[in-house]
Image (tube, rainbow, N blue to C red; front, side, top):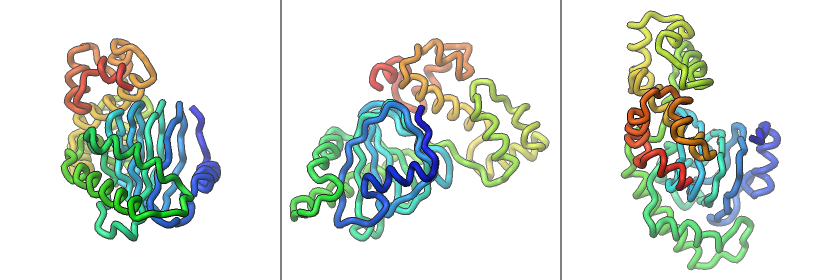
Length: 267
């Protein structure tokens, strides 16, 4: 994986015209094997659609999963960093002046066939396009309205791994994410320096989830990334901590909505 520093990430933003406001909305084709963009923000609302591949975006409230066949909404001026794995898709950038009431949270949402076609049709208007027609303005207005409809209907926490505000919990979470397949609550308690009762109380308060729900989601996030790299389902299940293939498949379907074998082929 190519890992970019903050200055290197800023260079990419500048090369794509994302470091400064432009006139109107525009689209950029996204295709990358494996790359990590460090913390950054830009003056546009962003929608990235992943036709294939798996991407993770970390924002102010946690890590967000962008699996193939889905899109993600990133509000303007939201600081985030992005890990891309074999992405094939498109990113749309919308002028926030045209969308004063847009949502303020990063959200992963499902994509209808119509919306998918509209995403790729938007490539007719790339960054730096000076000839802004009434058709382009109308098209992007409709595109963002359709996207916002899907955002509003998206399940509340299906594709987000919440971040805790308590520093001791953050330490335990960071330790678990190094290797979620081997993470245990007893190890998390040691890393957090808390009693089990305090840990459970603070964890639910900060994340809205139990530890078991959170680590299950972390394992599925990691599994989605491994599957998009072409690893076998049985190997992935073992690596993320499942002795039972059926239990792994159930957890994966509950979150992603498709069996791991099919997901591997699709991405």
